[in-house]
Structure formats: structure tokens, C-alpha cells
Image 1 (cartoon, rainbow, N blue to C red):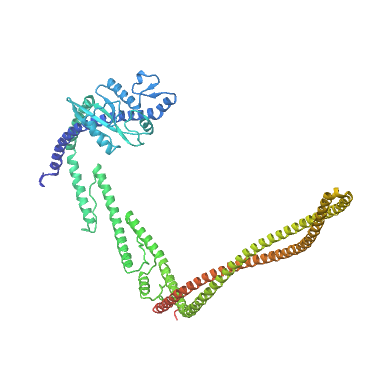
Image 2: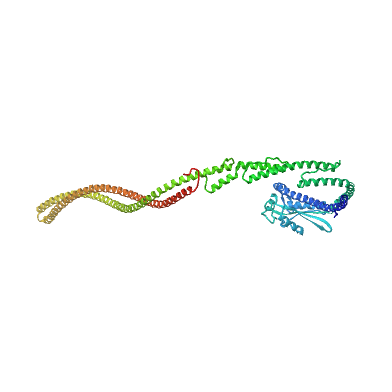
Length: 640
């Protein structure tokens, strides 16, 4: 804007005047903008306070007051004015507050609105309310507002989200007019909307801003005039300081090796400034020298680290606090590296390189760091492990050879044992079959013995019945003998009587002839009766003799049956014992057979395991030889 040949005074004065004018205009523009911003922010604060107070009032009413009213028997209802015990719902109360505020503060409006109002309310949403619901649903924590023109008046429409609290959830989920009954705490319900007219705020704020704008304009004019008076002094002092600073910057940029001081002896602020600058120039010059030495020392230490030597520290103390902290941190890092790693990285690298070539006999000399000691310990541990591995490999190689031979013997013996067990199992099966048949035969013999015993008992009973019958026959024969004796006596008496009748008939002569005939017949009848009685007696005597013989024979049969039953019982008991023993033998043979079968299965399994063991032994022998060969390829402490 200005050419380089203008004086410093002109270059200062003209910009000051123009800058003053620009500042005045800028202040006026800023004040107008600030007025609008303050007016809007004031409206937002008023609307935010009203909305938050209404929301908090609703939460307190729904969460604290309403439960107490319900506990006393009260309830909320849309027609609460006309019903006893009824009170307005929380949302109704907020809308009532909004109506009261509108009456007290004309133009101010407060109300709740939602896309899910109670079914008894008809709520028409305007464009702003629909936009605000969409915005608040996406970001419930951020209020939504718009500046609109309402019939030539500036109006602030403001809305915050209406989020469900616990009291609201309890009310809405149990209210009969609620369109939704699964509300949860934190759900977006709707919005609390506030409308605030900004005209009255604009009038009061404009008066104050007009005063401020006028005062600022006067102050800026006076400031420009004062600046013109001090321009000459400022220019001269500025030129002196400029020359001194240019010289000092040349020193900082390494263009000169000496920093020149500013030659200004005035007592004003510029003189004091020049004095302070000179003091700082001197101090900075000395500090830069110290810092330069420190940087050189640090570079030397870093070069040593690059070469693998960590034994050096930065011993020079710089003046710059950041550089001092850097050197301190570098020294601490080097100390930690020496403690954790070591002092000679080249030696560590050589040992690790030897390790990579399977040479574990190399060590880090003068090991002090943890890694140096750990590498040496690692070499010794690896050597010890390799030594043990070599020893174990050789031992395992020898043992595996023995194991292979033993497994082959075990395999052959298992096969022989399996064959023997198969033959034994076959023989046991035949023995089991024979014992089972014997057991069945013994059981059948027991059955026959029981049948014979039953038949013998029946024969004994029949013999006893025969003896009883013989006794009865003998008794009846005795009675028959007695009757025969009576008949014999009657025949004898009849014969005597017939003789007497014959005598009397003979005596009677002719008159007694018929009687004599009768008497003769009676005598004949008596004679025949006596003869018949004799014959019957003879028969009875023979029957008695035969009955006595039958009784004797029956008694002999009873004794024989008793002996037969006793022998049958002994035989049956013996058969039962043989049957029990046969069953026990059968069970024992079955158990032995099962054991032989299991032993055969185990022998077969052992044979299979022996084969597998042989394979394992062969693999083990191969691995052992590989371990020995691998260990012999490496160099380690204790290798023979």
C-alpha cells in the first residue's frame, strides 16, 4: 500500500488514521452484530430457562407429587375440574403454566407437543414443531431453535427434548388414554416448545448499544490524535531497537560471531525496553554458547551409540531448560540401556551371530547389563540343554533298541497266548455244554424222583387202607363165626325139636303122620343148615386165614414203602445237591469262560498295543538318533 521511500512517521501516521477509521466502522458493525447476537442469546436463555423449568416441574409433579396424591386416593383425569378427587395430569399442568405465562407475558408461548399425544387430545403441529421433533429425536441432548418473522416481528421458536423419566413411564404405561404402554426411561416422548418475541428485547438492547457505539467513536478519535503526537518519539526509538535487533538476529542466524547491544539511553518505555533487550542479548549469547557445546557433546555421544558403545554420557550442562531436560533424559536412557542391555552392543551382536551359527560357547565379556547377563546365561542354559539332550538322546537310542527287542518278544508271546486262550475257550465251551446237559439231566432225575416219591406215598397209603380193610374183614368174619355158631345151635335145637316132633307124631299114630312129615323136613332142613353152616364156617376160616396173610403182607408193604420213601428222600436230597453243585459248576465255568474271553480280548488288545508300541519304539529310536545327530552339529559347553 505504501512505497518503501515513505518516512516511518508517514508510514505510522497514515495507517493509524486509516486504522482508526476502520476500527470505528468495525466497532459499529461488530456492535450491531453483537446486538443481534446478544438479543438472540437473551431470547434463547429466556426460552431455555422456561423450557427446563417446565420440564423439571413436570418431572417433580409426576415423580414426587403425583404418587403422594395417588397414595391419598387421588388420580389424574382430563376432566379434573368437574370430578372430585381428580387432578390434572403432568402434561396438562405444563400446558396450564404455558397459558398463564402467555397471559402474563403477551407473545410468549409454552406448550408440550408430540407425535403421540393422548387419545383425548387433538394436537395440530406446525412446520417448526415437525422440524424440531425430527431434529430432537436424532439428537435429544441438543436444543433446536429458529428465528422467524411473525407478522413483521422477530420471534424465537425454541424446543428441547421431552425424555421419559421414571414418573412419566409409570403414568403413561398405566394410563388408559396413552397411545403407547411400553415406554422406558430415556425414551424420546416429544418436545417442550417456547416462543419468545424479540422486539422488546431489541428495543432495550438498542438504546444501550447506541450509547456504547457513540462512546467508542469518540474514544477512537482521541486515540488517533494521541497516537499522532507520540509518533515521532516512537519512530526514533523503534529505529534504534530495529537496528539492535537486526544485529542480534544476525548473531542468532550465525551471520556474525558477536551480538551488538542497542544504543538507546532514553528513560521512556523504549529505553527500558532497549535495556531489557540488551540484558537478554547478553544472557542469550552466553546460553547459546553453552547450548552449542552441549549439542556438540550430545552428537559425540550419539556417534558412540551408533558405533555400539553405550559407556559415555553427556557431561556438558546447557542453559536451555528443554535442552537440559533432553540431555538429562538422554543420560537416563543411556543408563537404563547400560543397566537393561549393556555397554557393548557389538559384543552382544557377535554372540547372537554365533548363536545363529549354533555356536553357544561364545560369551559377552565384562557383562553388566541384564541382557548381556541374560545372553550369557542363555548360552549356558542352551549348552546345558543340548548336553542333556545329547545324553538323553544317546540313552533313549540305547533304550529304544532294547524296547524294540522286548516288544517283538512281547508280540510273539501275545500271539501264542492268544492262540492258547482260543483253544482253552473252545474246551471250556465244550465243558460248559456238558455241565449244562448234566445239570438238565439231574433236574429231570429230580423230577422223576419227586414223581416216584409221590407214587410211593400213594402206595403206602393204599397198603395202610388194605390193612384197615383186612382188620374190618377179620372183624366181620368173627361176627359171621358167631352167627354160624348161632345157626349151628339153632340147627341143633331144630333137629332135637324135629326128633321130639317125630316121637310125638309116632306116638300120635295116624293123626301125627302129617306132622311127622313136617318134622322130617324140618330135620332135613336143620341138617342142611348145619352142613351149610359148617361149609360157611370152613370158608370163613379160610377167609380169616387169607385176611391174616393179607394183613401181614400189607404190613410188610407198609414197611417196604417206608424204607422206599426214606431211600427216595435220600436220593432226592442227593439229586438236589448234585443239581446245586452242577449249577454252581455251570456258573463257575461260565465265569471262567467269560474271564477267558475277556483275557483273550485283552491279549488281542495287548498284541495290538504291542504292535503299536513297536511302531512307537521305532519312531522313538529314529527321533533319538535325530536328537543325537542334531546335538552333535552344535558347539556348546560340555560337548564331548
